[in-house]
Image (cartoon, rainbow, N blue to C red; front, side, top):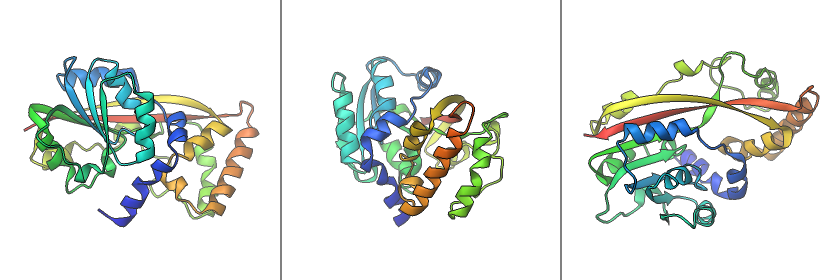
Length: 263
């Protein structure tokens, strides 16, 4: 794993309470589809990679599943233990790549906004080993979406990102949700999974300035940003949102669910 990836994936453990408060939950429809596509039944034992504070974990525990979590960050894991105490959950503090599972196997191995942080040379092989025959791998993430009519604030603020050397690297405006690439080909190329199915979900959240800045403080790139540049950016964001007739910003989220059967 690259040094940069390792550094960035550890930044989240520095803000466990903020992460829990600011990061969005996932749509109920996503979990409905996950249950159906992965042929889950209440009581099944699931393994989650990178549970953070347990946002996705809770949704599945409430649906009657038993969950084992492997979380890299000790502070995130502790927050998850407190929040999920009434449920049938185990939380282990370890990088997934080095976690020793013994003889345990699972009906589902899944990751919510964590799969891309796992070493690509290891993740499919290890997930395959942890699954029972006929079990499933699932992963998804919550990323910024830009459907038609997205809030113009995000185009307007790019001049500040440009000025501090944090420019948007891809085309602008970003591609609509149906053109955002999925990972189905990568899953199939592993040779370890088949019957890959993909579903997409878009939802929106309105953020006052304080809440939007709190959200930015949970993203690895903003956490690792030069403090002076971050202060300049946040000052501009606060001032620009404050000048709006409705002093909030409307951010769309996209989750791309991947579910594949163990070959």
